[in-house]
Image 1 (cartoon, rainbow, N blue to C red):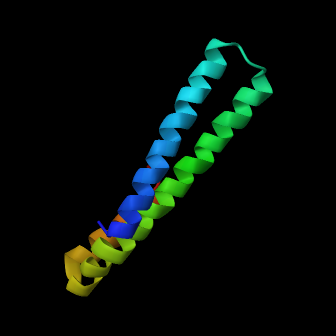
Image 2: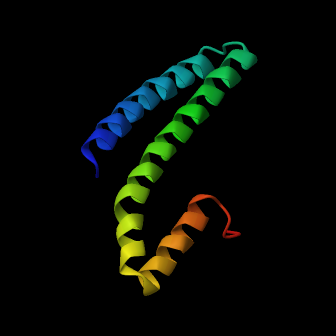
Length: 90
């Protein structure tokens, strides 16, 4: 994994851990539903941010290599990207 992306991804996971603990407390405390939903949506955006980092790493490392190799490796890279974007119908 690219060092900078790894650091950023780990930082994002720590933020997510805190957000999830906070969400659990909000539910336990029976906070206002819209506040809980707002926190849940923030977690979803944080997960998307993490996914972007992971995808960037995959593109810069594995996919680049797989395309250079060509053949079945290239086809596997294409299939993985389609799956990552939910375009493979699964």
